[in-house]
Length: 179
Image 1 (spheres, helix red, strand yellow):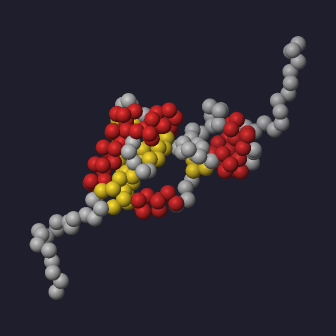
Image 2: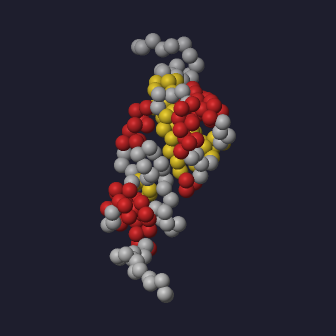
Image 3: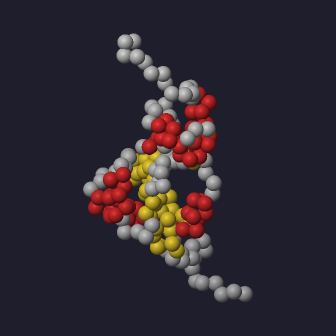
């Protein structure tokens, strides 16, 4: 029979230190300058800032070394709070999610329904230059995330736009000045 440690039944074992990724969701929008300020003030080997303009939220993900889930959440919240304070920003925390670094990387590797300008051009059958013109239209879907590699859009939103988009082929006619 194995030796059992002397501890009450149901009490969890001491957690082992691990590398965690803690994502703190903030109410509000961070412009590029604010995101850069936060990135430079947070003391973390990994800082990922993603915008969600449709819901007016920003996710700040930081790497922390902690002994268990609760300690990871506390460390992540503290790191983001310090970063916001040092950057002079007052945004409210509306959510937090913590997962091991391995789980975070597994989730990020899963295919998503987010598409970039190159993929939008294929979906709509147009050039990337034309995509960059279309995104300025008020009826074009809002981007979901803005990582450093470029804005990402929801594939479903782009496909819905394609179904209702009134395509005008060719260049607009020039009008004479006398008209």
